[in-house]
Image 1 (tube, rainbow, N blue to C red):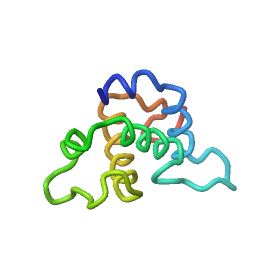
Image 2: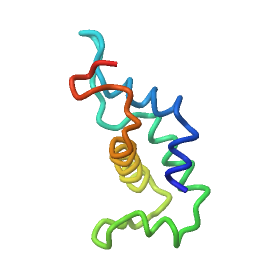
Image 3: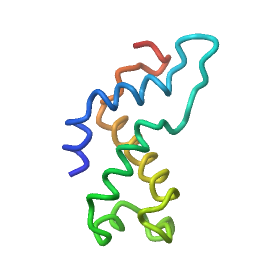
Image 4: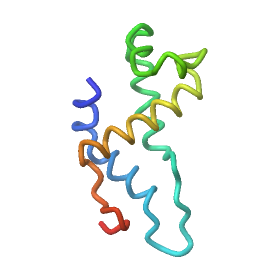
Length: 96
């Protein structure tokens, strides 16, 4: 499900990657973008509680699987998964 979610939201991934790569001096690099948080929140709302637990290791399962902490953790995991799949349009030097 996560693989298809990332593949079907390439525009969102591009905007997320853009917010993580500074192009101008006045921009700030963000470790967690609003774009990935929105996708994470949508996954949380549309996934059964039992399935959401499978996204986390036993020692990192948040108390509230629909809360802000779970959204942030899911966002970080989605970002790592997108990088693993090579879906980041920027290279390691931040060049598009």
